[in-house]
Image 1 (cartoon, rainbow, N blue to C red):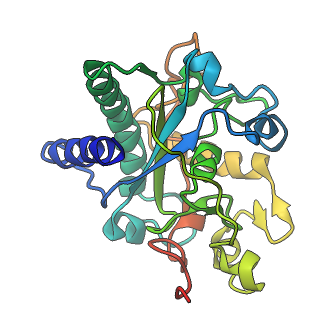
Image 2: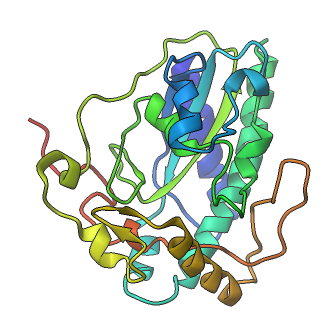
Length: 267
């Protein structure tokens, strides 16, 4: 079933690209344990009201997580200080739109085989007071063993960190992955690199931590520039889509050694 789910995701993306201005690399797919003992810790390291998989689906067993890498062309367009590139802003919104359609398709395919599946309503919400979502796609991917957190707070996968994650909760009966025990981030692994910090021109990202408000300030500035692509996030699970522009930046994801793969050779 893992191969079946992976094929559904890969095939959908390739078909979707035929009518999309944005293109993507090959998706990576992982499977997280919906009852993993570390899940409650997400209410400490992420949002204090983080939703548990069983609230999304009563008999949840697996969280299917997947990563869509951006292309090198999209990444290259966003290198340099100042506003995010229009290509980056569009790719961000196009990817979120793709997630909505792909998740619905995946749920339909799983249900056709007798399984149950659902998406967390909180996955497309963003609390503008605490500047967090109550469903962390990155932490779910981390639990699935898809990668580890870099200094830039992104998950560094086998295909790098330059892209976006989504997920579907299901009662699929497969063996889940587990968090990796070795770091994929050069800075955390060997105490060197830190290129992502140098690329953060606002100073929101440092080797000492991350200033969420500074980061969001830059994203808000970009939203004022890029209001043609919409905004994929709602203020809460019951609310409508925000009418602001594209709240993006992505400077710490581009032109870095971990953008499109692990920044070291496997031993």
